[in-house]
Length: 459
Image (cartoon, rainbow, N blue to C red; front, side, top):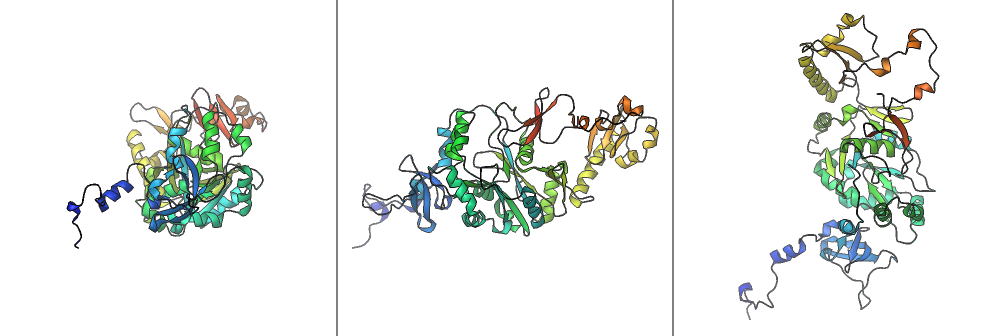
């Protein structure tokens, strides 16, 4: 008997077409097999929590282990239950529905650093050995070769790169649940960065490793939302971007921009500072062009929707330590910086009587009767009204106020002895030194300007 044509089958027994099956699989909110891997935290049978124990992606079959017991889920017949991807749900996708009401905390942003082996060695030597006794933020870092940065490789890289002593600490912190490596955050980053990332030969991605919060930290959270995050979200060994401050200190005013939040995250969590020039989008574009990865995004959003800045450290970047802070600055005369400097000089010359910065630098004798300026500063006369302003040749920034670090006090002009060393540590008016409750790092706060910053203020 011949096979019945599809349009002749009874409606109640008609087999689903391939298109219908595809539509059901990709229904809104449904997972695809490639979205899941061993260790992924999921919801199954409605609201039960578990982790992918084994993943058979090609067959769209997954074995799930209960979160608390670690036992593999079985059916009524005692056999291991074969889940399809569409039958599971990522816990992260449900957090917005479960989270307590949140208050406004301003922009939250992070940083993902890409650098050479030398850069990574410098950073890892600076950050030192991880603390194996108690939780820190972050716990340690992993430098992953960009050529290996494929989503499917991350679990193996995490397992190989994380010390067993850190696993012991993590399981001690949350002995009530099964704790393992989780790579969802970093996997999302790799997918956002696209195919150009693995093309960065001789470059590494710097990933932070976060430990789960212990019960003391969970119970000591400053809000219901923070307590929920610490207990239900950050309860595994997570591979994340280089720096992201997920919690804002209670009472601390919001950051003024995503860029400021990202820079402060890098400073407070990692003790790393990157020069203004290297943060500049045009400079990052030039660096990408030189490395042949022009399509690599400069920003993307992580699993929580927070903005992440992707900073590539040029091969010739200069690393120095200033007052205990690891600083990366552009190399003198670097190609990626010359264009930016030329543009700045061209723009300045339009407002400076038609002269270029170099012209004014060689014409400082006409200001000889005025107080001496500090290194790198020159005076420029505006062509509009002959008013004088100040230009820093190093930072490429202008100011209409006399540089305060150059001002001499009356006692100094009179030949009095210099102020005690303690006075040199005084901050400019309005600024206060603060210590972050969540990281223990120092930052500075100006109540009048409603501004916070990691770098020590100069004015």
